[in-house]
Image 1 (cartoon, each protein chain N blue to C red):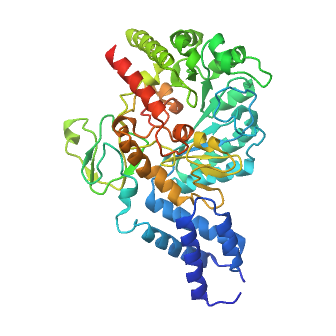
Image 2: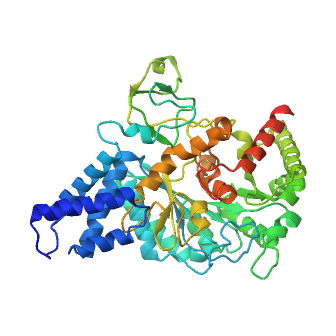
Image 3: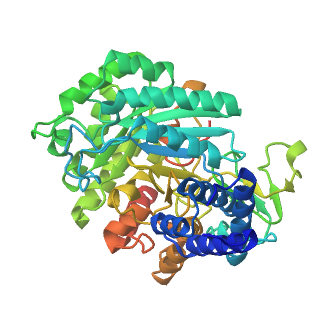
Length: 112
Length: 402
């Protein structure tokens, strides 16, 4: 059999992905359910970040995301979210830029 | 093999989709089945890799962090090391390491800040690979509009000035493994010949501080060194350690008395640390807020993955080390990508772990613990390590009450 063209490969790949995603119930905006199972976090509701509102972790949220309140001008800020950053409550801050470069010192959550 | 184009595509689509849905991350048999239909092996790999990437992008967070398990070789034989089951001879080729970096960028999606950790074994034994990978990854980051940071965990005994100059220039942050002062450290962190490694680590740290003034240390506390934990922290701080990550050894039995000694010593550490005004000291366990995370499980498989010496992919290095030849909860490999879709879904979603924790009444605060520790305790990464939960509860209670 001749080798497939790049277009044929792409088409077949897309069909495979579509079929897998359908089976896994991840099409049509249902995909949030796979990531949002945090104990303290209900994806069906609005979630407000805690300070300092920066984290490497990500999650899906079907409704709105409200950044942590830092000043009055940001108090009511919210935006639509899909994959958005949120604040880990275990985050901590370093004193200066040099120390903040030590990302290894926090296994999974670090705020510089 | 002569079939119509549409029929071949339908059959092929079903074959691969079914294989991915029911698979466990090991796609060898799936590739064999595809090839039997007359498809070239290279085409099969391209199709699977492309489909798998698309599926992951739709279902899961982007991958932003990668541990490169550069080698299983180590010059030390630490008694408690979670890698003691490895054969200690295999190392990652530069070609595999480059492909791993390619995969990180392929799965990074919109994430702009990526991180690579060099892990082992002792990664310094693979310095040439580190050099090549660092520069390769930097080039890719520059070309792709991403920022990149590096870290490395080392036993500190193999440093040369050439290495340290390179690590400093490339901002590869080194985390040293030091368990305490000489008596505690040498009990468990010994070389292949059985000799303690403390003085070599101290020499390594002195060299390191010339290039990286702020030195972090991972301090593993064993049951019979818990009574010296406070003295060890004070001693290592005096010796130049600036940042401590303190953790009780897992996979070993702790008596109630030993747990009490650990807790009492952590109280002393806290009182000393919080009672002073240290500009040159951080202790992670005391800086972080109480454990009330926003999701179950950990970062493993979520936005962080680990690549083995032969290019297989796990959620983290500790899970990988549970069995480096038959990966537990395998997430895929460098040829097919994160093809263990069901495994990644379980790891990211943690539904089984959450359910098991709830049934045992430890869900509220434990939040799943460490997958690898769960496996060591229960034989199942999704069944909670109740010993760790007991330990954690006692420590939290002691620190809260005193």
